[in-house]
Image (tube, rainbow, N blue to C red; front, side, top):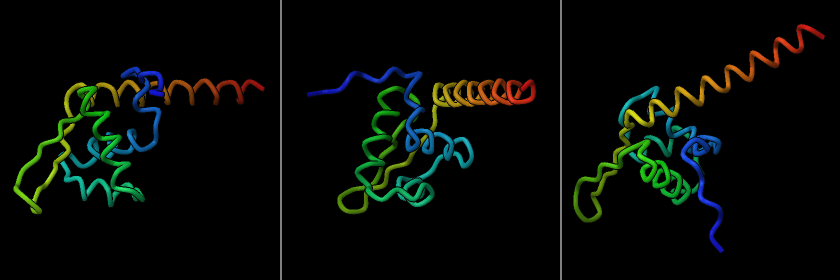
Length: 106
């Protein structure tokens, strides 16, 4: 039974998807293998699953090259992905600031 579709605004709630976008914001274009190693993901299939979700939402482009066993997939962040990351980050900062203000008032 398929689950409820994820809204684009909720895509970055998952740590793997957030990690992919954060890595792209930090490092720019990177290969599948580079992202896989940088995030310390245990299963390649998990990275493929989450990167495909981000690509379908237009947050990244998956640029494939090569032939046969020498294929390479590059992750390229899009303007939409940059904007989504900036909004997500701003939301986290706002929540953190509210929490800190609440604690200071107590």
